[in-house]
Length: 364
Ligand SMILES: [Zn+2]
Image 1 (spheres, rainbow, N blue to C red):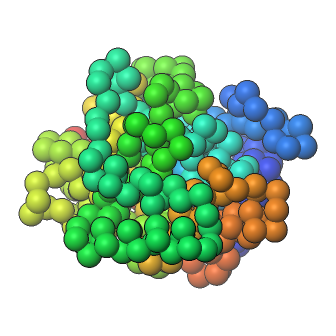
Image 2: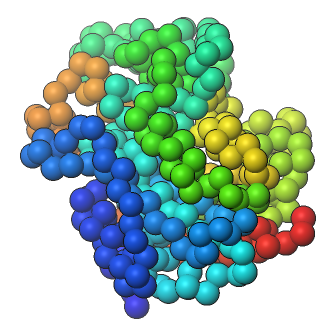
């Protein structure tokens, strides 16, 4: 069986393949319909499939498509795993829950964000509490939101960003841009003012499927950060939860919220990360959440493309040649066509799923 067949070139094909793969071994799929349709009137949805005993106290949750444009590699890993039959032979008292493309709107529109320009991975805030302010982002907001894609205004905006990078360094720039902000609905890394549909759907899924679990591991599939084809494990946990994640997934796991000496790699600190949502929704369980980040291209290439895409969202029109070109570039920066990259994605996913199942069934 070639794993390449499980990789799709668009969301609708990926959804069909996932549903078909679940059917091979008689696994039923529940559909959570998004309120919006695509441009042709076709329904968008998140699919949910359960493997193993319904009352299992140990649960592995695999989530794809938190960032829509990153959905297809994670979808392929879920589809390949469902089709392989290996989940028919899980350890005792253990189940796997797959959440296929939680940000289906973003997957269809080839956007990182959800409808409403919200980064789902910055939306898991407690919105009953005051939201953080971001002085560093305020310094670059006007430049990031430049209304002109090319021309003198854009040149001036790029100059402002270059000046910021000189003063704060590349790390400071990435932190300002990617950390999550809650003041500008038309800004970059906007975390929203309330839970978006995908956030509410994820909470509803975990309420329906996760409440009997006492020990949970969540693996979220992402792409676009780290070296080419390398599957970097990242955890937002600290202290004992972080130590457990290291024990399960290896000491090289990246932990951006841990003390400075333990910080490694390219990850940055963020507000409203989905890990906070898992901890709230699964409060009766010991939860170990990681992000599996597959590297593609360096930030020198991906950040300008993301700024272009932001310009398209706020000021442009996706139904133009320029708009389509920007979207295709975003897709390829997050989802290379190289078969070796895709093989590495699958191999690393298998390894991480094995580590997670061993962790869940261990006594530590
Ligand atoms: Zn991502």
